[in-house]
Image (cartoon, rainbow, N blue to C red):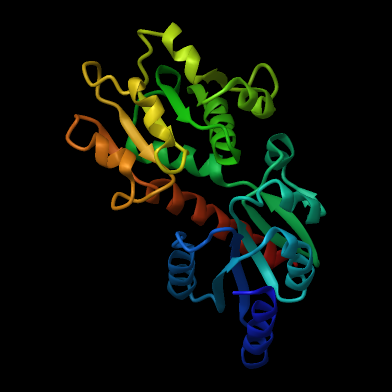
Length: 277
């Protein structure tokens, strides 16, 4: 959908739905997201007069779109490649967003955009549901070092987990080492794995798209203990990473594990801000 059509469709929707709150996802691409299914079902179940759309935006359309959204939209989900860029349009950020420098959720507070990040807290809640061991006894490896990876790593580290972020080269390590020395996860690049022949993780979280994660398969030594493996990028049907590990004695979860937890946190954030607007 072009920006022109987006604006026309929202104008038309508003003329016949005066009181309905409008929410949506912005990113590029957004077709793979099932956020509209989840959030619209949530609105219906909880009796909330609201609707959630998906908007695929070009980078050059973001300024005009954000200006337009101010008059129509009560909240936004933000996915790549806009998680950092979007902070240019907010007046207020949570302490977590200020530390991470990226957001996946925007809400409205007295006509001002406020930013939050639910990726990390969502993963914390997800892990509490699927395992009961003490956090300090568990080590987690996160494949990738993008916005989602660093947000998840930071929150898990603060919960007491031992966290390692694995990336493919040293340049990425420099760009993503944004946390304070006593809280940031340990960053390792692919070449450094050879120096850790006995590296044994309890949980592995993949944030890399496509086949990029296959570079790190040596972390999944099936001769050692069973691991929890989570692919936050794809569902079971589309995850080549999880398909490769099927039947290899690991406990596998797809993107729905994180998505539902962070989406509930988004809803809590939106509804709380609507009350105070």
